[in-house]
Length: 484
Image: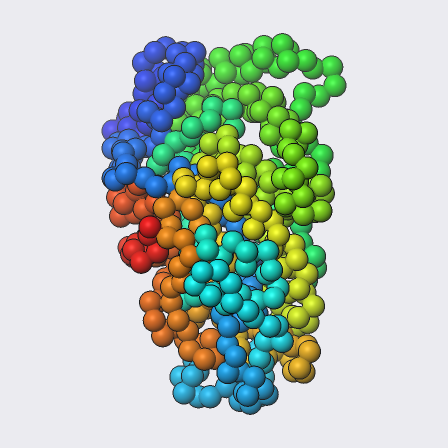
């Protein structure tokens, strides 16, 4: 087969109709009039058509990702019986021969470290919540708390990659990219997937985050997440350079689009048209992003609800408020990464700071969405890549200790978007080491997220290198017990 013919077979419907219309103008007009008509790749790519498989409950998601592995025993999974186990060896009957593979693999002992923090009951169901989360405790009746999440990954990078892309090895599309690919965008002036990397006050030498965590993998590049920066231009090169005005920028883009169109007609590479669309999006963002970041219309009551850090660009509080503003603008997926949760030592001090960063903003986000009527169709997810061990890493005292990575059980919560409010799922053993009831794999988490958007996770696929790929690989079950 002629290479040019072979390349032509890779074109998407958007590229095909754009070429048939003999120009980028008709293509841009078509996408502006009905952007969802071109949401996903066509059958020529082996991808699913952009149809909802059932009525959606959620239109958008705000994913609060605590990078590093928060300790579930200190925050959500109350284990009062551990007080009498202080400094005793973790029983073999609990560990069941599990190989220790991370930072504590060289320890001669695995002494139990009870949490030093107090828990109390909140909400209509008397949910146990740590004193570290007094604000989140006030909205516990809006949450579905899942204490039985588990994963196979035990180190940070593969575990985070697994959580956001469904595979431990890099190269797969992220959750936000899958949602953009499957459903398209409802806002012509902002990307369908926006990412924040919030500042933190816990452990300073936090794990790195890589742009591939919000990347597209083998999906078209237009679906990648846009990272908003906290200093300087929120998006690199968004502002016009000195001496360039809007009319000049428009003329330049028109000329560049014409050159790219000729290049596309010559080579038929679909990514060329993706680049054209990205340039156009950047032009529109020159007005939409400053409007997004202008908080002058926010009332004092709303700003106070998020806490004093809301006035500091880049903080978790400021990111949560911007996430609500993006939800108002129908941005499909917002993901906030908050680093510094990797407490191998000095856990009580560092974890206290981390919880102070996120507690009030999390509660404010839930309240703010609810009072604006957005919580019903906005899915809020709070979680991480894994949890922490009940046994201590390093020196153990009553007031100070550390914890290693623990993938066998950890806690997440969801709210809004058709999720059952005031619900608790899953139970772990007294040592918070193994799941006893209702195990939830991370593939189940992603299957449930897609389900709330009206997507059957087994049918949202993309053919690449001869195989149909999906977010949940060949696994995953919807967590029906937490659905409203």
